[in-house]
Length: 144
Ligand code: FES
Image 1: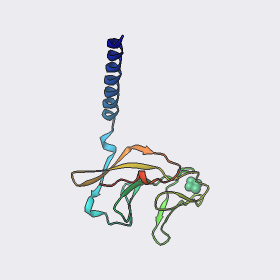
Image 2 (image 1 turned 90 degrees about the vertical axis):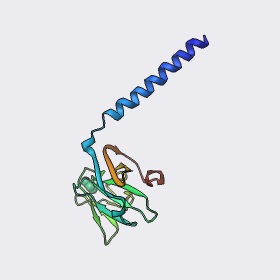
Image 3 (image 1 turned 60 degrees about the vertical axis):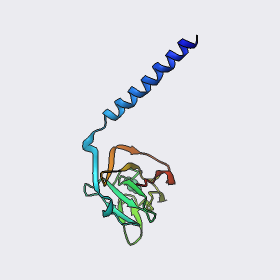
Image 4 (image 1 turned 90 degrees about the horizontal axis):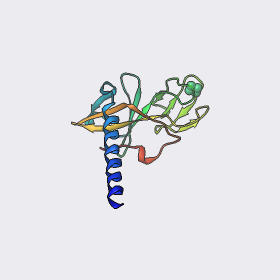
C-alpha cells in the first residue's frame, strides 16, 4: 500500500515538473523586450517604452513596475501626464495613479502589469505574461 502511494506521488511530481517545462517552453521570446540597462532608469520616474506597449515605472525605493498602457475600460491607450503625475485615458477620461490604481472611473480596475526582471544587467519585460489586478499591491513591485 505504501509503495503504491509512493509511486503515485512520484508520478504526480514528475507530471508537475513536465507541465512547468512545457509552459516555459511556450514562451514567445520575441515578446520578451529589453527595455534598457538598469542604470538607464532613475528612481521616481515613469518611462514610456518605445513600442508603445507599456510604461516602466521606477519608484523612489528603486522598485520597478511595468504597466500596460491599455485602459481597463475599453482598451484605449492611456498617456502619462508628467505635470499631473497620473495616467489619463483620452477616450472616456479615466485616470490612474503611477501604480496604475484607478483615480477616476469608468475604468473598473487597475491597469494590467507585466513581469519585470533583470538579466545580464538589462531590464526585461515579458509581454507574454499580462497580469490583471484589481488594485496595486506592494508585492507587484520587482526589486532587482
Ligand atoms: Fe479608457 Fe473608456 S477606454 S476610459
